[in-house]
Image 1 (cartoon, rainbow, N blue to C red):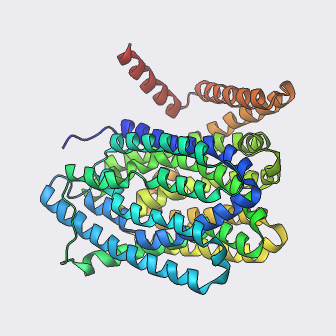
Image 2: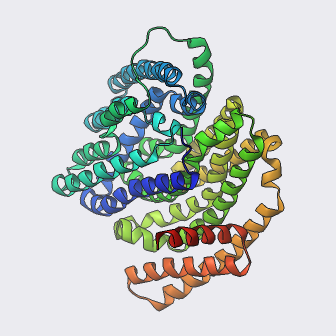
Image 3: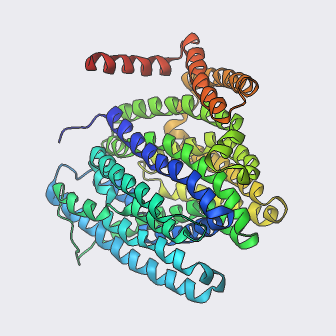
Length: 487
C-alpha cells in the first residue's frame, strides 16, 4: 500500500479540525446570543453528561484499534477479522452505555430536567460506534474524512440558521450539533468496505483484547473526568448561568487546543507502526520534528489568546459573557502542559504499550482536578474550574514525562528544544508589544483584533527568522517548494 505523506495528512487533518472549529465559530456567536446564558448552560450541561456515556461506549477501542490495526493494514483478511472483532466489542459496550444512561435518568432527579436534551445528545453514542472512524485513521485516509465532514457541516450551518430562532430552541441546536458531528457515520460504515468487510462476529479472543482495551478505557474515563468534570460540577454546585459563562471560555480554549492537536493525531498511526516495527531512529526523528514544531506553535497561541481574551469574548459571544475573560486567561496557561502531555501519552506511552503508566497519570490528574473543584468552586466558581484544569494538565505532563523519559528524555532535554523554547519566548514578547500597541491604535473591536492577529504572526515569524530558528526555516522551505511546484 502506498504510504501517504505525513505533511499532507497533517494538513488534511488540521484542515478538518479547523472546519470542525469554524462550524462552532460561525454558529457559537449566533447561538450564544439567541439562546442566552441560561440556554447555553442547559445545552453544555446535557452535553457533558452524555460525554461520560459516550466514553463507556467507546471503551478505549479506537486507540487500541489504531495501534494494533496498523500491523494488519496490508492484509485484508487479517484486518477484516480484527476490525470485525473491534466492531462487535464496540456494539456490546454501546448497549451497556445506553442501559446505564437510562438508569441514571431514572435514578437522579436533577437530570430529569435535562432528559430530552440528553437523549438528543445520546444519539452520538450509536452513530459514533457505527462510524468506525478508526479504520480511516489506520489507513491514514484523511481526504475522505475531511470532505465528508465539510459537506455535513455546511448542511448543519443551513439548518442552524433555519431552526434556531429563539431562547427555547436549544433542543434544535443540540440536534443540529449531533447531525454535524456524526451524521455522516452511516456513510463511513459503508465506505469502510474499501478496506475491509466489517461484520458482527461471535468468536472473539476476549482475553487478548480486553486487558489493554480496559486499561485504555479507564485512562479515557479519568481523562474525561478532568476534561468534563468542571462543567458537570459547576452545574451541580452552582447554576446554569455559571455553566454558560465557563462554557464560553472552555469552548475557546478547546478550539485552539483542537487545532494544535490535529497535527499530532495524524502522527499516531505512523508512530505506532514505526515503534512496533522497531524502527526507533525513524520514530524519534518524526517525534522530534513534531514536538519542536508544537513548541513553536503553542507559546504564541497561548500568549496571543491571553492578550486578546477580552476582544475574543466580545466577538464570539458578546458583552453578556465578559465575565468569562478571567477564566479564559487562566486556561491559557494550560496549553503548554496539555499539548506536551498529549505527545507523551498518545505518541510515546501508548505506542510503547505502557497503558498502565498513562492510566496512573490520568488517575492522579483527575483526582487532583475533582478535589480542587470541590473545595474551590463554591468560592471561585468558573475560575476554580479553570485553575483546576491548569493543575491537572501540569500533573499529567509531569507524570507522563517521568514514565516516558527513558524513551524520549534525550528529545525533551536536547539543545534543539531548549533553543526553540527560548526563541519562542522572545517571539512572544513581540506579540505582547503588538497587541498593546493595537489596543491603543484602534477603537474598532474588529479592526483591533484583526491587526493584532495579523501583525503578531508577522512579528513572531520575523523574530524567529532573525534568530535563525530551524523549525521556521524548514516550514518556509517546504512552503516555497509547494508554491514553486504549483506555479
